[in-house]
Length: 355
Image (cartoon, rainbow, N blue to C red; front, side, top):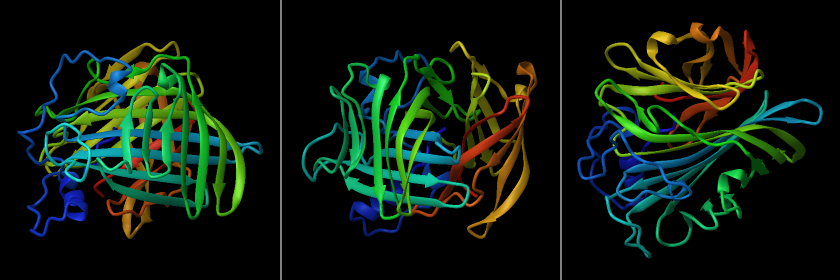
């Protein structure tokens, strides 16, 4: 689940506001009311490739890629690439500095011993960042997620670069994408907060990765998440723990736990069978329990988890490849690759916010 949002904080950073920000509700202000923006309601009919593009009228949106990679010697790495779109007003895109969209990019690489992260900010309307269709391209500065294919999710190019790392990857898949939740309506609380959410968990990635001056040829599975919303959290929700898991048996699993100030977390997920059939998982079907913590950025982080889904005979341990995978950015959070042991070994990604 990919809802890191920042609307007020980004507006202060880039919008030139000189007034004090109101108290945020929920993580990064995502519980703030958004009455003037388009609500997320059940029953949306998705349309592709149009829905790969930006959605005017919604407040927040992202294109989010993670990849679990190995080099030719079997060493493990992780890669993250994200483009966030934040609308300051519910109006259509326009050219020039009157544009009411802020763009944010996050990129990271992880090995068992190293984690590097970087960020980019841009104002919409001036060509520095954006998303276009036909051919598809999502970009901020020279960071790119692009395709020349008629169906862009079949063959993508992914790249990012910073002073300590770079990567250039090709992502391919012949499998259909997955609509999360109820046909793409992904509920985030008992009160009805939700996003529109689809994934492409079947990407296979290959290419090159540079870390601290050393270059590796890498390959492995990758996962794309696409979400858009206007108010995805309640004021009572403090953050989340999100898992995307590639199991060696061919299944894939998405889980998220939305933590609250008061009451039990909101827990749900998706089971993706090897043949692509999907099943929504409800809280009573899932056991998600932290097993071990590490001190990261002067705070305790649950870096090892037990996950059980008895209906699927799943009983696994999920452990961070690098426990110090802290995204030390303006909006800090933990995100990194994980190793999976137990009934269904595999690999995946974990994101934790609000700690």
